[in-house]
Image: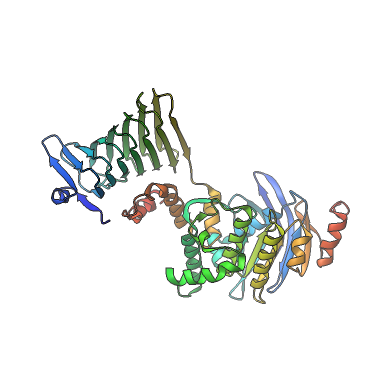
Length: 250
Length: 269
């Protein structure tokens, strides 16, 4: 589904990613762990198409309608419509923009691109009200401006709600567990697990084993200094929890 | 409540039992009777031959919500003045929204006379090309316990210009009053200009008063966030700009904010 080859990325002349290689197949869950500043969030934003980053070399291929396409040629909204979703570490607050209208517009943009019928306001309301309990949110959040006045946990829940509604093929969750209490983490993990299907894949970026106890990854990668330095199964995350990164980073 | 519609040359208010609308050679006078409530939507689609001058007299305990929407062709100029006299417990909310005209000048002089009056004076301008707007407001608080909120929001691009000068004068009798004056502008080009002169003159010693001005741009992270949900860049910018001015419209549910969408599309084109 996704293949990253020798990806080098810079921002303001500083190289952040220094040759990342990663292959993700449909149905898989991958976790990327790594120390602060290793490039984890940069990788997630580059995949989503953030314009601040400069791709200096390498490629990112994403399977669209059975064909490998160069994802880097797509604008951020085109990527989203093709099924790439980023759940933000720090979701952006958008004052004056109603959450319900935003979610409705986003879903209809994706549906229209897919050739599906767009949803009326009433039909969307019915749909979103069914999904809200999955992430522990109430209808009150729909009437508020996007993420404005939301607690950290509520913002993360709103991100997962968006993921569930947009139903992407590749969901990238950037430190979705940070700032969450254990109950919120369980709710969000349940929402993510329910989303897991044979035709989609997830890329979890996290610092902590506790998320991976709730969302079981197939592969764990360690990203350090802009490169994936080790790949393993879930046992790698357990080892990290005991040893830290000290013994792993050259 | 269905708003009264006021367009150029259409003085439907004359026959209303709620208000008195009087014309003279130099201007017009609109009186709102005590205890009455009225919503007014004024749409300016054609320039007057000479500057319009309106005196608005608000009765005790009257409630007025007024949207003045100036959407003249860019080939025309506009100049207007509004004189406001409030009374005890008057509730007056006014939105002056300007998106048209090549050169627009509008001034407000308000005497907030009665105790316990609540006044909201909002202004929004969305300008592009070489449009310019000059706004001047003078608000005098003559009595105690008056609440006055003034909010100005501007969006400018290309070589457009806005100049705002606003003075709120709290006289000695205006004890226990609360006033705020905030001007927020968003510039989408390097050549657009906004000049803001918010001023407070305070003679009373037991009041709350604040003022401020900000200038910003569309935030790339906000545009990216919306794009990352499948919304194209053009629509994302339009949504963000509409969100920027959204709070101007909250008290005026009879105004269809979609009337500004075409203009927003133009300013981000």
